Amino acid sequence: MDVKVLKKSEIIKYVALVLAFVLLITTVVFGVKNNKANQSNAELSSQLAENESLLQEKESENKALQEEKENLDKLYKDSLDVNTYQESMVDDLNKQIDELKKELSTKKGKNDKTTEKNENNAVLPKPIPAKGKTVYLTFDDGPCSLTPEILDILDEYNVKATFFVVNGKYNYLMKEIVDRGHKIGLHCYRHNYKAIYSSDEAYFEDLQKIHNVVKKETGVDADIMRFPGGGSNTISKKYSEGIMTRLTKSVVEKGYSYFDWNCYNGDADGEKNVNKMVENCSKFPKGADKIVVLMHDNKEATVKALPYIIEFFKSCGMEFGVLEKGMEYTNHPVYN
Ligand SMILES: [Zn+2]
Image 1: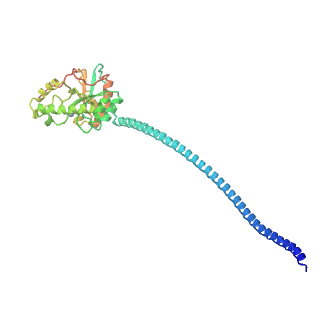
Image 2: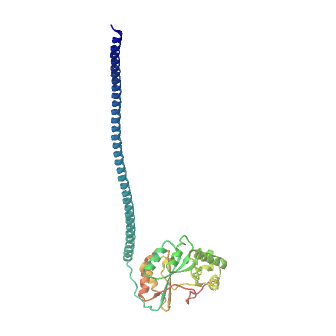
């Protein structure tokens, strides 16, 4: 064989084979690689798509939640409004109930008074013409639990009266007596004849004490008074001879006017019959132009009789007045 020829053709053949082989390997290798890359690329794409749809899903979920929250907020606000509205409705209703209760109790009170009047079935004495005379209703020994009822009756008839007060647990009512336009006077601090009439000093110590109570409760410097038992009492003789003769002068010297009475409904002597009490009042001295009526606001019977007593005096054509310091009036004779 010719080496040179062989060599040349062989070389070309081998080179071609080698080139083909390299080409083949390269194609195979690149093809695999490309395939792999394509594969992972597709995977990534599908993952991306998946994530995108997940994101969209979450976004729409989020939007739905947001809407729900807004709805709930609105509902909450509405319920608050409803609540406020209901509260104001409840307030209004409570006010209406209170007003109705008040109205009911007023009506009940009026009804009770009417019934009471009818039950008492009082027959007023025939009117005694007394035009131009003045009647002074006076109440001793209060204030007490019945005083508000007395004040209500006086208001109902638009009549003012005079209260000679004592110290007690109803002292706070002294202000109401004054505030409702009545006259307040002094009776005593301790309603005890032995204690107050044992000496002039004991008497004035007691009078000053009740003066101070009235001043403290009402701001009034009382200038009228009434002696327990009246200026004519003789019981004081047991404790101090001649004390009423001295006291009736010295109270005036100390700036007071004292008032006894010339008419009495009988309540402190146990009189309970309304007709009898009005009849007692009808026995006022016909020659006097000032009728001072003694009553006690701590007597139940007086509360019952008071409307008829007032009606009786009105039927006689009398005016009603309150006692004032310096008023001309004839007191009882003094016996001690
Ligand atoms: Zn008294």
